Image (tube, rainbow, N blue to C red):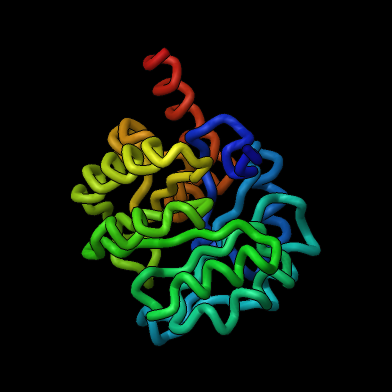
Length: 235
C-alpha cells in the first residue's frame, strides 16, 4: 500500500492556516514556520459564494509553491470546485480538499484532483452527516471535520466536533486505508488536549499561531510543547 504523504511524519501535527498570517510578508512568514519545524501549510480559499468571505486564489498558491517545499494543503471553500481543482494542482497544491456541500458532483471533483496528481480531501461542515465522507472513503486521502462554520478565522471551537472526530477516526480505521483525519477551527491551547484525544492526524490552527503576542514562531513553539507533553503522557 502506498503511504499517504500526510501520514509520513509523526502525527498529530500542526498545519498552520495562512488565512491569519501577515499576507504582505507571506514568504517571510512561511520561512518562520519552516524554521519552527512546520512541514504542512493549510491554505484557505474562499469565493464569497459558498462562504460569506473572499480570500486568496490560484496565484497565491503558485507563489507559495515557488517560495517553499512545504506541503500545501489547499482547502477550497468554493462553489463548484470541480471546475477549478486541476488549476490548483497545477499551481502547486499537494492536497486539495473540497466541501461535500459545495457541489452535487463531489465524486467528479475528487477524481479530477487525483487525476491531476494531488491527494484528494473531503471537508464536512458541522451540520453535515459523516456519511457523506464514509461513502467516499475508497477514493479519499483526507477527511476534514470542520469544528466551526467555515468562512472566517478566529471562531470558537464547537464541542460537538469531538464526537464527530471520534466517529470519523473509527470509520477510517475500519476502512483499512491510509486516510488522514484533519480538524479545522478553534484549535488552540484550550482545546488541544480534547482534540488530540479523538485520534486526529492534522491540526489546523490560525489565530493561536499568527496572533500570538510574541509572533508565529512562539505561537508554534507553545503549541508544539503542549502537544509533545500530551504525547509523552499517553505513551
